[in-house]
Image (cartoon, rainbow, N blue to C red; front, side, top):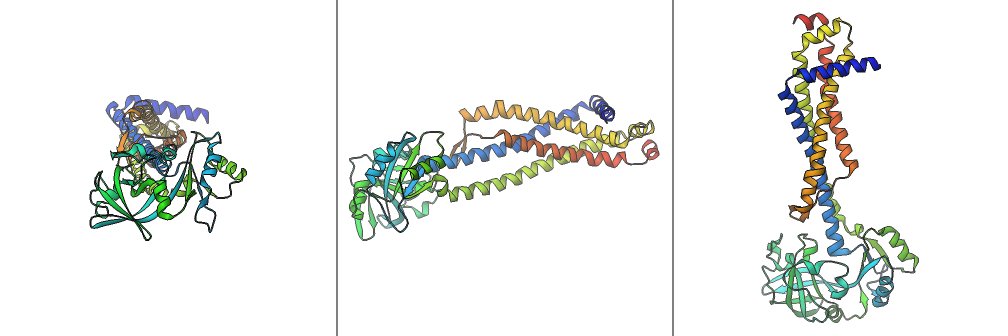
Length: 398
């Protein structure tokens, strides 16, 4: 077996060194591009997924959200509970929120929206909405009668659903907020955008204003918690339950249904593009090996005549294709690891959801490499086998 492998290796070496150098370089170049396509699509998808996750955590939910018990509308004694959670070493911020679903009215237009009442100082320790202001300012702790609108409510600023917005409200304009039977006038203090329509479809007011509208005090619809980087969210959830918190405790992923839907959709598109890339690699290798075998028919016949088995000849062409693939993948991996990925760290890819940095795990890269290897072996085996199994005399004299 070892001797046969050595013969196959020797024949492959002769084919490569004695063949057309231009075709060899072209084949390696194409396979490099195919490998880059396979890993780039996965890396972009990974980066986009990370971006969606960051948007959820940094601008909407934090890491953990506590909600009222079943059949209960509010979390009672919210200030005591937030103080208790804030004292835990894993926590960097806690924000008790009170929400109202109503209409925001401007002149002759109205938009249904979720309005979130917050203590701005607390909210700023959990989310980064205050840093997403594109016009005006975020509300402060002492502000009353002022509101911050997401761009999908205000309109303008690149809103995706402009026709369903207020049509271009500006900072300083007055809007009416109607929640239930309560009507209040608010001055627009700021407009924000995170580039994610789910987050940009909300509005923020001072918690005291919302308490006045709803007629409650020291109660909350939810408590958002931000953890130190690297903390295990599931473990922290268990810890909260262990210290006697009986409310509903949810990890941010439980709110990411639409994000998971978007991710699955993008992943399916990526899989289709990867399949096309593999088909291109298959066709290129098939053509190269097929032409090689046609040009070497007489040489293959002579090899069979002197006792070299068909399996050895087939293996030699497969090894030739493996060389093409290996060299192409090496160049592709080098370009990805040391050129493209470092570049995107300082120059992120600008997608509609914001800047995206490529993210590719070693496992994913190895999986893509294995797929390309499989396509290469199959594409080289078929034409080599077709020629090697032909009759010896036909190979020599045709």
